[in-house]
Image 1 (cartoon, rainbow, N blue to C red):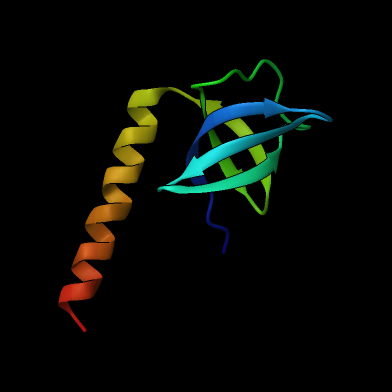
Image 2: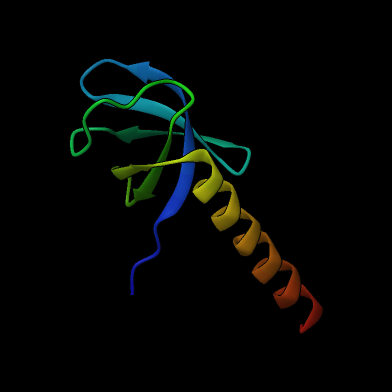
Length: 77
């Protein structure tokens, strides 16, 4: 099973790299597989690579679902 997470691009770096925000955590990822990504765009990240761009509404819906699942998991422990 794979888990890909939406992340917002904070900065474009050299060599097809970018710094993204993953739920408050800053991480460097590769943009080698996706063209035309800019600062402020959302990308789907898996194992340090952006797989594709997604629109902000889809990213926010997905992140809200992750937060909901995390909250539900905390209540069941």
